[in-house]
Length: 324
Image 1 (cartoon, rainbow, N blue to C red):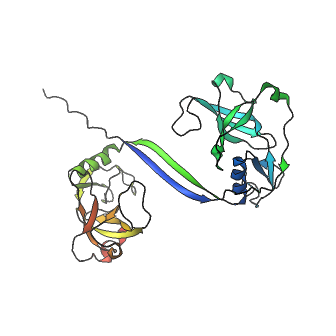
Image 2: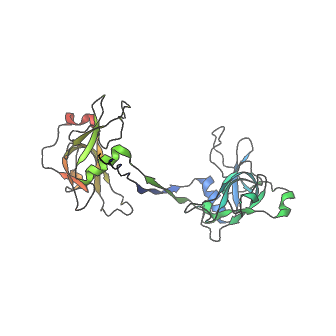
Image 3: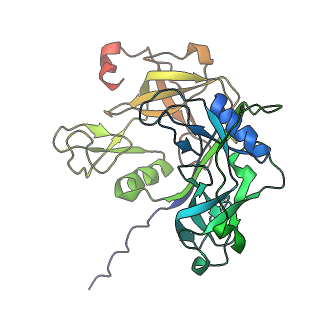
């Protein structure tokens, strides 16, 4: 009697996708964020007279440009809500809170933000809330730290009406840096697990489609053209051909590579799909289509550090034109 084989190890790894970028602001968004810094909430009137908060620059119905700014109240009414019992890092509050849509007095649309409440039993549609301003304000949506329940007396108080505002502020905010970030755990699945394990042995393995017979590297477990499962493993490379490339002139965060450098699509010998990798061992301005390259491994590395020229003659264009 033979022992049952152990199930293959399931690979998992934490991954972070992060891309902070600089955005310039038009006159409407500039006025809105500058106003928040001064504890003033601005909206914009649409062509049919409705007040939108946050403001937009074009009418959502007619697509006409709109510029008529108005000031609305810092108190409003919850139109809908959802309880967040497990706040994630960088969310407005570190303790459980409610996500709420609040229609501020004088506005016809609602703004999404956090409501600081002791529990879900303390939140209901129609409740009156007010803005809690951040102690330090810089001209960003985070200048609204959160909403908080309004005083009991406010429930019967008349709502503030929108009033005209010229949108002018000293030292107006003209641009912001928007930081987009996604943290998640990645599990590669059967096909890419085999690919990753082969790389650790300094081999590159793809999979062949049983229908069109193309070899895909990295493998995806199914042919993207035919839609059928792929299981036949095929070792390719190690050398390949540069099909296209780009010169990188902006230094990436946490990447210890001096600019300029080149990233290229490389069609490994025997593969029908180009993968991308960095090109080294040659001045950036000498990289070219058709350049023959080979992988360079570092001690203990689980994947090629970069590719370098093999010294072979350049590949003929017809040999790789279908992989561009």
